[in-house]
View 1: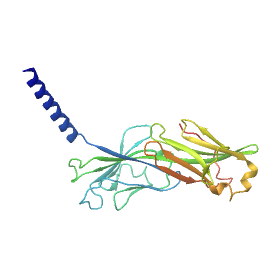
View 2: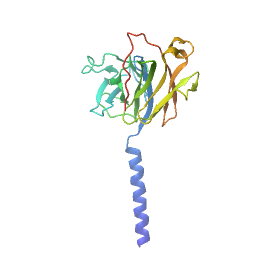
View 3: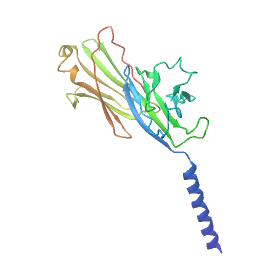
View 4: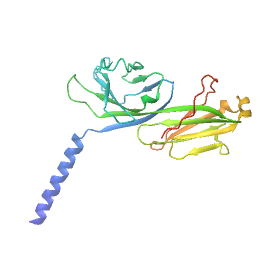
Length: 234
C-alpha cells in the first residue's frame, strides 16, 4: 500500500514539475558593451512573425541602481511619457533599439517583449540585453601620463579589463585594479610624442566573464580641451 502511495505521489510531483516548466516564462539574455559617446543597437532576438512596424513590440529599461522599470517603447513607438527624457532612442525596422551617443546613465537592462495583439497576453519569453559603458580618460601627473579604461556595469562587475599594446598585454606598464572593473596604464610623458607607435596601438580589451566574449576598444588621443579627470567605477 505504501509503495502504491509513493508511486502516486511521485507521479503527481513529476506532473507538477512539468506544468511549472511549461507555464513559467523563460528569460533569454545577452551582454553588450559600448564606448561612451558612440552609438549602439540592441537587438531584439525574440521578434515574432506578423509584426507591422513593430506594433506588438515593447522595450522596458531598468537602470544600474535597479529602480523601477520604465517602458521606453510601446507598440513600436517611443513612449510619449518618456520621449522628452529619452531623446536619443529610436526603433529600427527589425524592432531593435538604437541608442545614440551612449552615456553612463544608459547602463542597465533592456528587455524586449512580444505580443500578438494589443492588450493581449505576452507571446514567448523576454529577451534582455545588459548594456555596459566603456569610459576612457587621460590625465597627467608630473612627468607621467595615466590612461584609464573603466567599465560601468549593471549590478556587480562581470568584466575583465586590460590594456593591450601592439596586440599584446604590456605587463611592465599595466596596473590592474582587482574588482574595480577598470585598468590603468602609466608611462612617461616623453612617450606621448610617439603617438603613431604608442597611442595608435593602445587598445582596451574587455572580456565578459560569463560569455567569454572579447571586445577591443582603441584608445583615441584627446586634445587638451577634451581631457577629463580619471574616474573609477565599482
